[in-house]
Image (cartoon, rainbow, N blue to C red; front, side):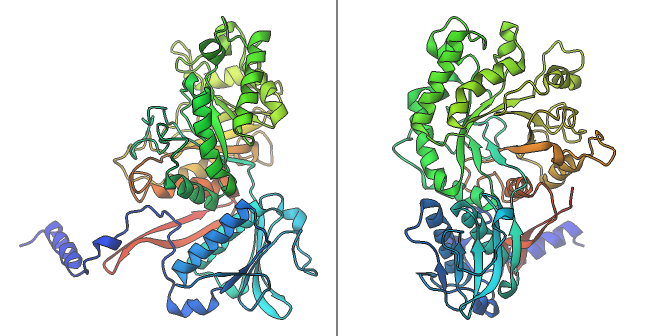
Length: 506
């Protein structure tokens, strides 16, 4: 008699043998959620045949139009023509500079990055309007329209307005300059530093497309346990090449900065943040960085933690160190992301150390400093209460740091969906106000430690892509109501792998 396991194995083998040979077209996960497979024929009539947009188009608008055309080629098997006049079924991309008169759109409510999708009549033609104040908003709106088409929305009756609830939405890559990845389980670093800046892998462009589709607008290229070399001219040129690829997709480049760089690179005798020579060195270095990357985002800093150098080495505090860097970046519009993950081997209570060091400094950080706080007080534990700094620093901008890679949740081995953990952290009530004050209400930025590498499927498995996706969508919405329908990611007549995420309000 066959056991149930033998019976199941036999059934699966039979199902696989019945499938046609499709090795050349089997899913490898590379396309992520930008997988524009043909919709049922019955839905093709609702798909557009043209897209109306401003001319000449900026690089960002070109990216939006290119994504729409790529999507239509897959979803409907047809080309999407660029047009100057709207016809029935057209997509119309509009900003205040070129919007048709009489639409009475809520431009102010959309902000710089928000968008509106609306089915309207223009001069007798039934069209879908993608409206935004900027070309970046149009890019986000174009991705939203493609998402709606993929998930079965009624494209003839669209009404969707969305704006990000978090200003900075970043990936943090713990990638080393030798292409090893700390807590990486998906191959080597995708940044091929040896070939940059001259050779730019096509994968960089697809990385930018994927992040833009989620609304992620920044990426820290190198590990928080940084090397001073990342701020040298050769590596700045390499980072600048990546910034050029990412810029049309609204993504700024950030770098992890080693606090002792003035001594290591500049030959100074100290890296004391109150030393005039050290402050001058950082100002000169910031000017050098912005000359290479005019829209550089800023520095991420891990200081006085796990052996990393920092201001406490000189009897200074975290505000002294962060404000020195903020002073250097401020003329260029850059920000400092100063991590609150600190602990010493002799700490009496590791869970309390960050609170003890940072809470008394509330209100003492420069305006362009964001204190980046992990979701919990220890270190990305599988179960952990929210970090007590949330709610305790009302005068200081805070970023929530989440870990997309599964350091303590099974590495590359276990199947774990992180969305509920992220949501739980955002929804946690800090209890600093009688009416409630969630962690989400306390943050102005969100950072996710990336799970991305050179594996063909980006994240080590098809399923782990969902954690990258969930982070991006939550960083945009701050866990406001967000319904994501089941989307086929890997399908044969015998098997389908789908993602389903329902995010509750917080």
